[in-house]
Length: 110
Image (cartoon, rainbow, N blue to C red; front, side, top):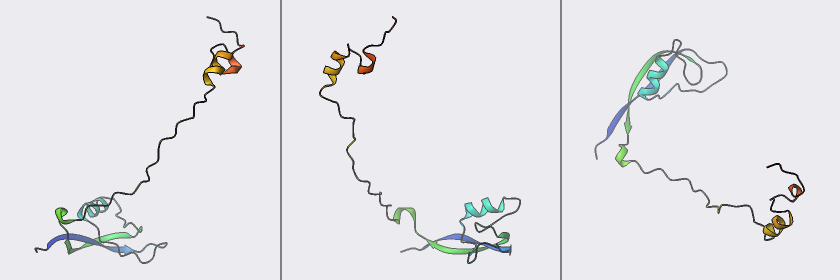
């Protein structure tokens, strides 16, 4: 089986951040490295100031050999509709056809 390699980048920093400890400043993919490097002041995700980049070769898995991501298991829930009262028609008749009995005595101008 042929091993396919890719490139990963690790940032070499000038000033370490004060609040975050233990960041490895990488690995970054080529796209993320370009995004960071384009900034006026390039910062690592830990907010360390980046001076330069170290390039390394890493083994990668081809797209056609990667396992398909598992679909999240979402419970199937039956839609809930408001229950219709069996007396709904009787209420409308008693209310003079109005859906709300309080509106039965209202004077509507037509």
